[in-house]
View (cartoon, one colour):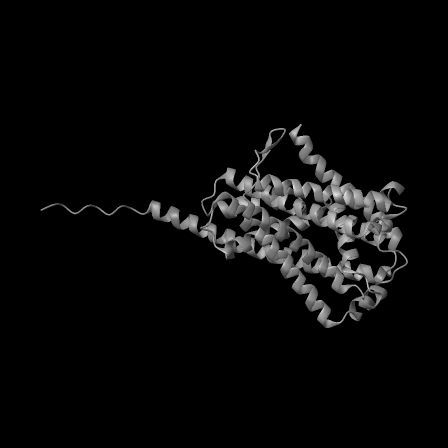
Length: 333
């Protein structure tokens, strides 16, 4: 059964890419490459700079995820630089590949085991980083729906009418914020861990919890900022709208298991922003993939090659020193 599951999710991801790709083709077949290029060249240079800075904010927050998890484990001897490079490499791969065997455990295990962490510690670190991301998504999702419950109107015709109702949206937003509040109360009161089947969720110390509530939204705000700064400013898309659509698109992409959310992310984004020309949206999404996914992915491959080369060199040196003949002991006079 385990082998079936290992093959099932990649197949589901591939199917999601094919279906969403076909739907995207039907949606965008009237757009020419000249239209998209015109949208890209119309973006002022300073907004590209702001999109680049948003990317740095997002990846800095992701590095903070790892740092927070290490503090939760009581590990303080690993430098910020090592943590940042490890986190950057991990997320650059996971965002593009989408396979958990490459994205979380394997990359982090290779890196943090070289610093003395056990397999159990690394498993907790991976789980806490994933939980931190989920916490940020729930928090921002709850805030956006509570502040502007009309946001789900943008998906009218694509979701059940009940879900597009402002009252429903506000109720969902309050429920999401309530879940975050329960987590905060559990951390402050040191409640016993929650048991979900064989897994146990321990409430972290309040200091760790506060860091999570800052780092997770910061990463999502940075990622959404990339798209916001590339969209045409004269159409005045509010940041709240862009953030809400980004959260919905990114969540749908993750659920689909499509590598890099390819096709699924774009499809939801286009459906939720009918008031902006499709060429402009597509240009913003291309820049997002370039800044947030492709450039980091290329850099992460270089980092992995350098790391593995250094590890291989250390291994050969160690073997060489073990094989060196022991010099004879001089006779005692």
